[in-house]
Length: 262
Image (cartoon, rainbow, N blue to C red; front, top):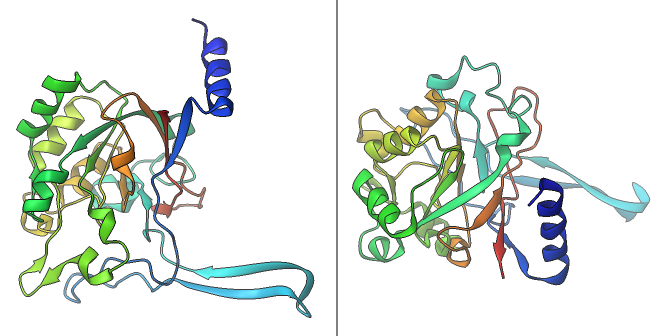
């Protein structure tokens, strides 16, 4: 089948409903949960603010629009390589320089929701990925791999979503060997439903925050605060992850979408 025919079939599928578009992004607004760093680590991103410029009134009689105050890594967002010290030297490592071909690709969804329901600190390991491959097939080069945990269902409760106690944050994610293995497969990017691409316990791993450190060291990308992965099959979907084309951007809120067979 030619590439032209493939695109024609995709267009027809979108029109006739045989291909469904699943929204993988959370609403972005003042109630969006944001990462809270301890003061000894660094400064936090500001709370999201939406300010009205005009609303069919004296400031603009025929139109309504707003201005925003928010951090690049707010809500469902894209992490570019220059977000982390390990990726700071990549010339194509910012949101305005990343090749757009890298922002659309096949999607692999690893379902860890049952394990996370029993243990919010659950870590996906290399062995866990290999077990998934034994059931669903080998992860192909250029794929995006995401961890389904159903953590997004906590989005309406900031405290439950961040899940911090006196021992620190508790949320699921990958361990370092998981990310190393995925990178050895040639993945394009990794995604998580938590506040970031790492688990809550990642600060104590080696290296600290391995998803961030290792992905960006390899000039690969991250997605955080994903939603609705329970509506996406393990394989066979296409993910679309366009960040805003922010000049020298280290990341961006994004409306992540998956194309799935209906």
